[in-house]
Image 1 (tube, rainbow, N blue to C red):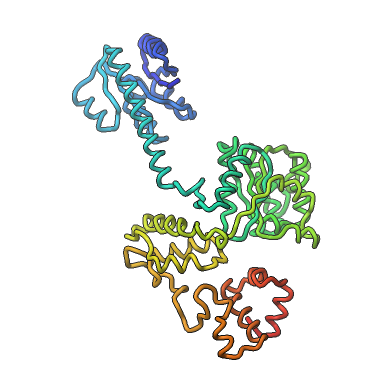
Image 2 (spheres, rainbow, N blue to C red; image 1 turned 30 degrees about the vertical axis):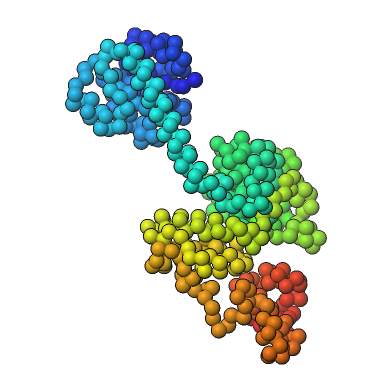
Amino acid sequence: MKKILVVDDRLSSLKVLAAILADEGYEVLQAADGQEALRMYESGVEIDAVLSDFKMPKMDGLELFKAMNTRRKAPPFIIMSAYGTVKSAVQALQEGITHYLIKPLDYEELSIILKKAIQDREMAIELKTLKRQIEDENAYHGIVGRSPKMLEIFEMVRTVGKTDASVMICGETGTGKELLARALHLESGRRKAEMVCINSAALTENLLEAELFGYVKGAFTGAEVASRGRLEMADHGTLFLDEIGYMSLRLQTKLLRFLQEKTFEPVGGTVSRHVDARIIAATNLDLQEKIRTGGFLRDLLYRIEVINIQVPPLRERKGDIYLLVHHFAKLYARRYEKGVEGIEPEAMDVLVKHRWPGNVRELKNYIERAVILSKKSKLCLEDFPKFLPSEKATVDHFPGKPPILRLFEDKYSLQQVEKELIQATLEQYDGNKSLTAQHLGISRKTLYKKLADYALE
């Protein structure tokens, strides 16, 4: 049923209008003045149209319309007046009023006008939604991707999101783990409540504990007033724990207790607090390895990892690079008011062949920089200086593997090949030793030994 808000300071007129509209199948809300109507609107009630008298004490109809618009876009607004003039009608329509009716009302005319106003509003909403769908046809809750792996993940999010199950999202840095966590929240029944985020790697142990669980007054030096933690802020919503693999064992134990009992004590407190929050965690570490080395609680992993989502690195979903490049180019061209309308095939080919150790986040930063500095209508290879050919380049696609011909011509020894491979791979990953070791298939300990042997930085 469509909801109509009728506003009139004359009780008799209010009751008559309410009865007529109810007979036509509308759900009618009634307000005796503009202030009462505004309070009703501010409460969040969804209203499909407003039918308001013009002259009322406290707040007239036009003032009510303006006040509603300052809160959020007002629904179709029809003004009724027994003292109507051409001047007042023109003023009302210029302000955005949908229609202006003269009392006594022609109820047949009112019925037609009301029905058309609601239909026009629904059509505008539908067109806006359709436009957004066309613009974001390759995006799911802001996540761009159409590769089979990503479509599989989106389907899992749709299924899992409707539950309260805890989720562990695993993937390399920059793959979009937080975006997936937000998609899970938006697919859940908790979407009207808050999704609260906290990064376990960004804070010291004591600060993380205070931020996560809150604290009471006097809990530590400087705690002059009590403070709610992120966990309590996420009550009836979702708590996203990013980089949970860096959390200390002591805090892991405290979090495990919350997952088991849904209660916790703030720092310095003795009274338990109950919170209904869904937990979603993310990590770029191998938590099984951390469990083996005593750095992560097995029981905590079991509690959180009811559902595990593995986010693929960008190099394993190269088909999505085309979509991401165009998406980010369009985004930043609009943001920085640049005339960039696409990308040259040669530049796109280079971007697709790159391994992107920083994943989507790295690609996004490169596109933003290119759009800002570009002087042409299309991004070209010159806008990506890192990928321009240089004397140091050893291969077209990945510098960590010297060409076969060069190996024979220069008579490389096995040690020279290994040294150049390690150096090139290290450069490819911008000095990140963990990713370098992972790519070479060796442990970090072995990598450090070889770096020392070959005097590499």
